[in-house]
Length: 364
Image 1 (tube, rainbow, N blue to C red):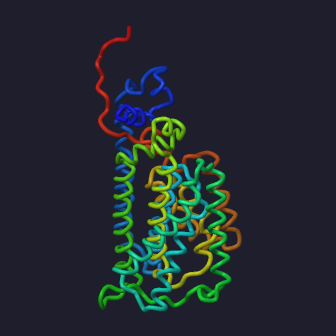
Image 2: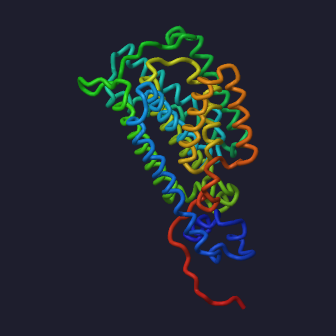
Image 3: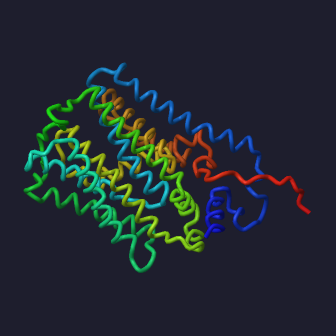
């Protein structure tokens, strides 16, 4: 299995590395590879720095809007793990997001539970449970699931949850569940503003670091191979469908956490949180920013939400058309997302372990 792991680690370096054909990727110019590795930490640091100073330069209502964007970035992060690292096109990611939102809203309405120490774990658990059930059904069958089957399955699940919420009187029907009380910690209430913003930002940073550790771990090594060449991973003895089910559950867990934060921040939940439109929205976030990079999901969310806010305020009649054209242009000319302007393919795939040492022996 050690040889298999070494081969998997080289999958991202090019199609000829494992087969032995052509020039090994290890002999590529070292400066080009090492220089690329400096880009991602710089981008992450700049994004974090900007996020930290935003409440100091924004007006109060814009800080509230920025808090919403940070929560949606957490939601986009969950989808990037599923699609960008496992190749699962989930058109039902909003199912876990909305299910957690409805779950914590019911806890607040019926049981008067608003403590952040109970609400966030509850929302996370709901997202995990829902993703385990749906992922187990779609991914862990007797035969490997196709991309189309999983895409349509998640789409169907999201649509069914939307229709269920609209028709169930206990969940408020079309109106959803309004007037959710604020989150509390003891006697303290989290009101909209800088404190709420920094609390949400702290959660995003912690989850981001955990995701970064995950995708750079031994498990992430297998995921990188899975994304690049699933058949080769299966040939090496890895259970590709099990790997997909695990990362699908992790993505659902993060989506549940984001959904619980979103419900309390907005003060109400409604069926659209479960539906196909919201699921498609998160796909656009990641596609626009760049999939398989984590930071691309965050950047895509910030730009799309920021541009939408500005366009809707200045061009109220035609702003959806302008935004649609902008998204179309990016997808046409930068299919790897905006992050591809500064991030090379080698760094996007990642590097695992120590680089092989050059022996300096000339080939016969």
